[in-house]
Length: 501
Ligand SMILES: Nc1ncnc2c1ncn2[C@@H]1O[C@H](COP(=O)(O)OP(=O)(O)OP(=O)(O)O)[C@@H](O)[C@H]1O
Ligand SMILES: [Mg+2]
Image (cartoon, rainbow, N blue to C red; front, side):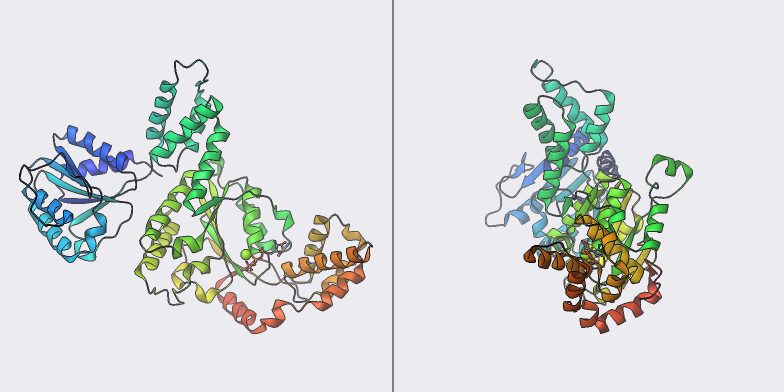
């Protein structure tokens, strides 16, 4: 849950309790500053706000700045000499916290301010705390606006057009609730701008327009993407056990299930051979369950510029929770760990921390976000990922057996408007032993090309010819697949009962 009235309250409590230095994680400077101003009034403290370019506003001291002292050290000097009953907000300070002189001065300041009615508040979008400072600085995560704040913005927006006859600013209670819900996961400024834009362009609060805008904003983060759910479970051949498992949980996100005392499922990991339908199934779950689906760009999150990644993962998690209940799809999870190595030890601390944040979230999340992760290279996955409590289950998706190949042929023939009854599916299944679902699809597509080229309808013969020409991955990667199966046997649940070829 994102309730950041809570964060402001937490800050107030810490300031009252005379904690010397707080670190507020947020990229919304205005919102944090406003919250501090309110707290300042409440506790009769003066708020001094510092930026790199303007220094302190208002200035806490009357003396001239010490010549040649770098701005960040000058700021600390001013706090050191500053008046009591103050709140010093430092906005651009976080990049300097790697400097050993800054670390030293902060430690001294922490000792000096402890128990005094003066608090220093450093804010930044990312948390990069040198370990020497961990004991001296208290971290507060200032979340995105919660429902109350969004409602206040909504009321302001309604007020702003009250006297404008061209705009229909009527908001029934049901619409109100949905507007507030749809604006969650956005920053305060973004909420203001989606409401304003809807009023200008649609002359009303248009839920669709707001959701579209939100999709755009989410896309712009580059971390998550709304994924239109098109495939259905019936488009996936085989995987009967996995489908059964999912079916039993299809209603688990409803109020009814909650009232019954069921916990929301956390998620599954689909592990397996390439081209056997892992991604396909992941996409189908959201459609089947009627939930929105967000795709997580794993490579971006884990592999992005140093310093950005931690902010990214927090933001992605918050957005996903704000859309909940939803399905969060992390495709090709192992790609995020390139360079992490099988040991889970990262060469860059950032990847490890991002990874830890993600793991903690998986373990502790209470919001109904169903995570579906897929992977085909287990050796690249850190072992912590696979431990109990992270996923509900780890399913192994193997090459389709004979029966499953029959059903995959049927699915893809129908998809291309061919009647499976016109083909001998059993014979095709025999001819495609060791083929993946993707390769079976290729056989059909190849046969269609041949037939089209020859100017006739596609035949059983075309298919058999095509199948002969394909060397399946299972032949080329026999050994790898063998290892994977061996590994999976001990640690995963099969997605189907293999009845043999
Ligand atoms: N079990 C299946 N039933 C129906 N179609 C399938 C099946 N498996 C694969 N296909 C077809 O092959 C395509 C590729 O499969 P998909 O991308 O889902 O495989 P994957 O397991 O995610 O592979 P990778 O490990 O390479 O990501 C699917 O879009 C679908 O058209
Ligand atoms: Mg895939």
